[in-house]
Length: 278
Image (cartoon, rainbow, N blue to C red; front, side, top):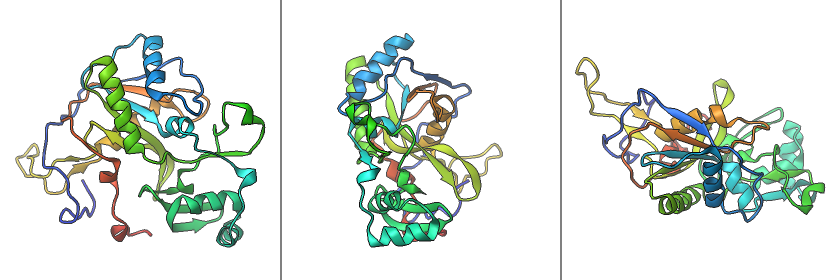
């Protein structure tokens, strides 16, 4: 069920060839080193496939954590060198958060949605709403001579959809397999504790599966059922990728049936004028 989705304002493709898989296989790829600035992500994936003794097949979905692209593109920030603005100092005073980190959050955001003690929920420049603008302070240290400085923060990739498409194209060409790529990040939910994997970049996989117009078991036509397919894939992969020191940023999902088409994680985002919690 899609709650309050204004179909008249959001363009979602009509029902397509997607089927619920009776069985899925999720495999974390082995032997992935700590990603360094300038690393070729496609080469890292190919090496990990060899280490895991896997070969890409048509229909496979590769889920990659956003942190991989953040690290490879050098989105590191030495927090000790950040100069807080007056606005950052004001917000930091209100919520009890490091004003340097608040400055980074404000710089990566377009608006503040909610604040509370040590919490700041914002709308990121990429369009999604999350805590701390997706900025990571864990596993954020560069893997080079700068490691002794810091503390470090790691910003979100500048264009996860583009990163996903470039990786999909490179791997499809190298491995002769029509695959999809989902870039995932951990997001919280307004009315539930804990984080789940969410898609912030998509290529080759429908971000949304529009089932409006399809029949249910009793023949009743579905009127509002739209599934966040890319988010579901990201959440499933999160179960084997882990969040701490596992070091498993690449997860191969096998068994889905879907229509291969151009897509974007922005299809998943509710427009700001329809955000009832902002």
